[in-house]
Image (cartoon, rainbow, N blue to C red; front, top):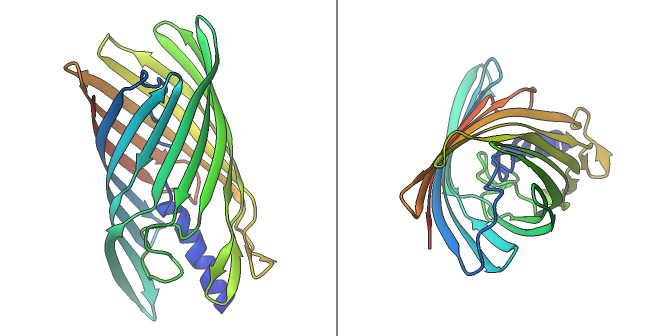
Length: 269
């Protein structure tokens, strides 16, 4: 029973991880420039019987200390609600608190007149409520690291992009057993279309190919698989320093949230 409980807790954790499938701006800031922003995000999932809801307020900071180099950090404050079956009743549980802190370093590598390649190193710190200690979690409970590269081709007014990366989630003790989440290969491809000098829209498909999870050295049945999402975004520049954005993400596979909606604001300095 202990192994089963840990497996269930782990399968709930990805919903609280950093939503890397919401694309960030691919154009790096100029040297010495920065951006402050806030994103409000709502996710909902229904498995036919139970509902899971989550609301996040996510402030972020971007800064470019050097040409072609940018640092990004975000730290969410979250409300999470989950329904569980207890006996013959459906019990609703909720919690609030900080989520996991996400850090990203981006470097613009090779580039040409109409193409460029970006490299990124991502880190997620388990500052949120762990699924191993709380009935409803706001964090994934594990340190995570990912590397990846994004290739972009400019075909004015289109920008085509393709991202390929690898994520590792570090094992930790959950209760009485060590939990080693499955590693994953990530990909994202799509296009950015400039509707006019101030407005652009994005269409993309994002996926994770996840390996098996191990609890106490034993593979958890059904823990591997594919997570696929379809997304649409709209970004609008307001004035010289502000921008507004919205994203809608729809899960295409069983283990992804049904829908995620995000509304963001950024101010450059």
